[in-house]
View 1 (cartoon, rainbow, N blue to C red):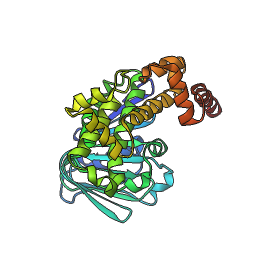
View 2 (view 1 turned 90 degrees about the horizontal axis):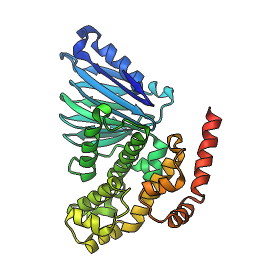
View 3 (view 1 turned 120 degrees about the vertical axis):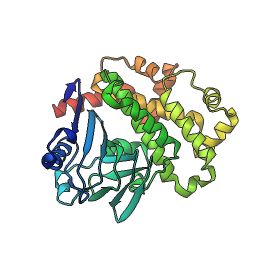
View 4 (view 1 turned 60 degrees about the vertical axis):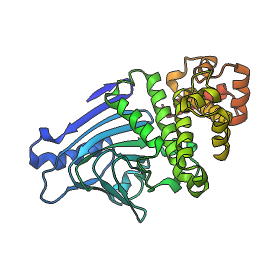
Length: 330
């Protein structure tokens, strides 16, 4: 186990254990790092699993592989009061999930959002690997309208946001990109934003059918590129369009068909990033002006006007409220 500056990394490999102890040790480990579940290996098979987790404030990443088995979070387990969400990406093999009266089959690269506050059964149908994110329900709800409607809906592997998210998570294994508190907050922001984009495609459903396919993929690629480069002051529609290899007006129309505009999307993401930084104690020594520049604003007056209009308070108001909240909890 590694603990450093609010980062906890821990792993378990059953191959290192006597076969008779593997199931019990895996169950105990998972209950400690995530939440309580039961596990039953496929009859007649030798249980093998490897799981590694990285936990930082606001986010937990679990990478692992497992032989065929059934994981169940029963009604009795729900008494632990955990209500976080689990975003599960099936990276290889096949699996199925049952919850809310629905059955979702996941093939290579497919994903699904589940709730730890609901009885759920996950079956690893074949040996395979997966990545799971433990996410704050309140944070994700602030980014995804009608969040509950996206639960237990398969997100296919060909969805660009899923591929972008999976690639980003692969680079995070081992914690190499999370060496400082500031970097960890950037990682949390990136992950939540990419998950929100993926869930947005699910939420839109039939309303976004007219721009699905190639147009939807380009829009999702544009959003992902914006999120990863939100600190750039030169982040314009021309820059993003050139990255995608499309015309600027074409890109603007994609955002308009999505019910927004390019400028509005960029502004909202910059304001959200600034709000999160102002709310985090680790950034409290950093002046508000520096935070504004860090998220891509070049005009401080415009930043303050936009922030107050969007949140109904000033940047300093958010910082003071966050400090008072932390004092009350101390």
